[in-house]
Structure formats: C-alpha cells, structure tokens
Image (cartoon, rainbow, N blue to C red; front, side, top):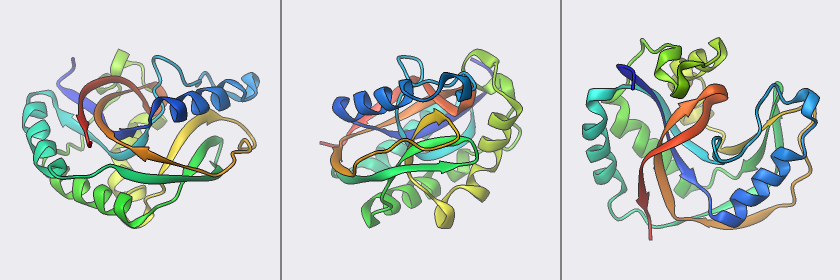
Length: 194
C-alpha cells in the first residue's frame, strides 16, 4: 500500500440493488464505456466521503468512523431514476435528510485525516487517471456538502439508462480503497447499521 490511500467511505447497497446496478452497467454501450463496467472489482456504491488519507492514519480514521456510526440506524434510500453529468451516468439517489446528515457528519469527522497531496499511486493498482486524482483532490470543494449529489455510478455513456424509481434499505457503510475511475475496488473495513 502506498504512503497515501485514495479512500471512499460509501454505502454498499443490498445485493438486489447491486445486481440491478451491475445489469444497467453491463447494458451500457461498450464503445462509450471508457473501460468502466461495474463488477467484482468495481463495486456499486453511494459515496459519502472521498479523500486521501495517510496509510498510517487508517486505524485512527476507522476509530472515528466507529464513533460517527454508533447508533446510526439503517437508511431508507430512494432511487429516483437515471442521471448523467458529462459522460458519467448513474442511478440518482434522493438526497433525503437522513442521508445528507450522515454525509455531513462523516465529512466533519474525517476532515482531520484529509491529505491534499495524493497522486495516482494512492489508488488501488496505482493506475489512476489524472481525472481520478483531481476528483478526489477536489471532492470536498466540488462534490460535497451543498453540492452533494448521491448516486450509484454505472459507467460512461452519452445517455443515462432508464431506471424506474424504487426504495431500498441501506445497512452497510464501508471504507473502500479507490481504483481507476474512482471505483470502490477493495473493502478495507465495513460497518453494519442494523
């Protein structure tokens, strides 16, 4: 593991929702995918926090997550349909108050561990794209708090897939090592909200 770790603290959806995300990802036009397809090495997830963390601080960060997730009940999340920004498509998640509060609490709890000097070596496999490095570096400023848009990334395409709205219960939060395309490649530790 490198000196820094590109980390995603994320909700891992239940297996039926994960399967639906995998199916939608696999159905995206291959010629538009840019190599991103969900699967065993690219886990479906709903990001709560992304940041670079010193590998030596991971145990302290896990302890902070233990405290922040104590008494956190499962969340009822609603997929509202398909979404898109640039060439990335996803299953849009309603930013319900409970989800937003959890996101804000974790952003606050983990801020002290955030490092700004991450590079491609911080990612699983060490082969991140320049855009991946920049995304994690600017997550707090560009994609969190007031600009937080919860979703499950499906891949790349010109048009988002059709997704019928549905609701599910989220019971697992995990700290994941990010890989190429900011995918959750490896679960480092997980918390059960049940």
